[in-house]
Image (cartoon, rainbow, N blue to C red; front, side, top):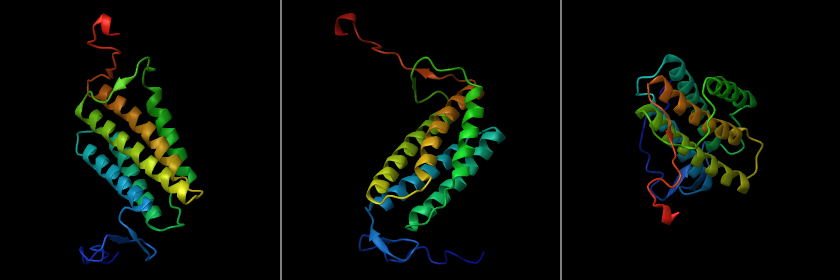
Length: 188
């Protein structure tokens, strides 16, 4: 591969527009750019999580997801292009089932937290949910048959499970939500 990015700044976005992969220009607050930016933010959150000490299976899983998210960014940058495939959704489902099978069933809601890496995974999960919402907004305005919404939906579920896995593997525990914690009986 040659030098793809020889000049980092182009000044072409100084007027509030940005270029898509097909050469067209859209406003920087266009629904497509909002979705693309949130997917990029999610990928960066996973990059932060990958700076933590992680077991190799989790590191490989998250790195594969980062590559998928870059593919999704490519899909979003070229109207009509589909990069996320059904087999990528199925792969996430298999990974999700494998990691979830080793966890005790939840009987209570949990709060984001526990170990540092689990907390970072929860942050990634919430950004993933936002990316899913942004993509849903885009899809409602410009319907497509992409698997991207399914992918993000499964990914947010996987990130929830991985946060629980990280807590277990690193000697932490899920932080259980306590309903009405700290309220006096007469306030309830």
